[in-house]
Length: 151
Image (cartoon, rainbow, N blue to C red):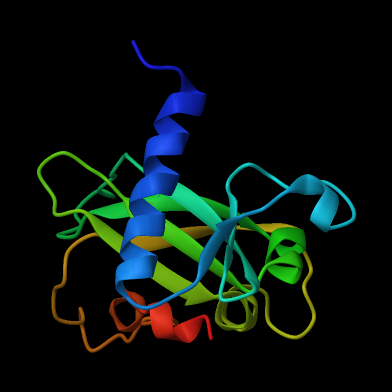
């Protein structure tokens, strides 16, 4: 059985490969380069701090036609990083990376006056037409493989 650290190293290696293939300069972050705590899940993409989240589980609300990944996002994290990278590796679904700028998430999830410190993000795992003409607050599909958003 693999340790969580070894699994995360493989995830970071896959993300680094994809980002470099898209023409990005990617470095791992050394804790002494920035003041304060730096997570091992943080990368420097084109000189911008980015947080990597591995998505391995899907959920389907009752009577829903779609599968989602639930990810908890904190306001503090969104203030510290330029983008969140969601690396989706779920059995039966294609491997994907969503590169979403933190300013987009802050505006959609917390607004201009945040009243709580964390929100749950529901990342759609399959591309389906909008339901009852309801548009999502964030069209996540615009950010699939959007490495150019971190420039």
